[in-house]
Image (tube, rainbow, N blue to C red; front, side, top):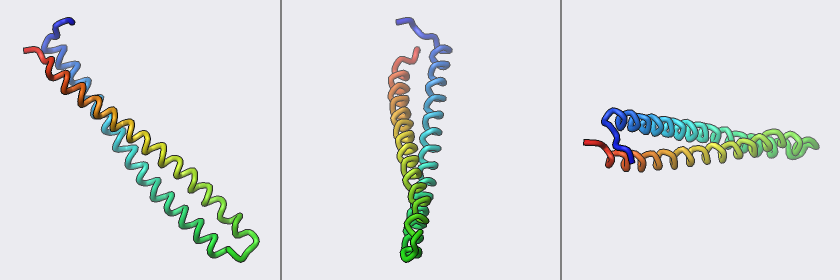
Length: 109
């Protein structure tokens, strides 16, 4: 293995720190968006239930509840997608932290 100069080591270390910051930002953004989508999903579920309860006697009651019900299912799929992205970003952060710890052991004197 080639010996690293202090300048090269610092450059590579700062690159790892930037990657860690990017992964943390992705994790935070995905978690925040998933939380907002959960609120939307709960609202759509309540809307579908309310429409079904209010329009239960009419012929088009079930038809009126289909759009919010379908939007609820689509929103749940997006929640699952963004939770998975947040999990992957968290795994990236942990991997980068392990790399940084290993990298600091190789710091030239």
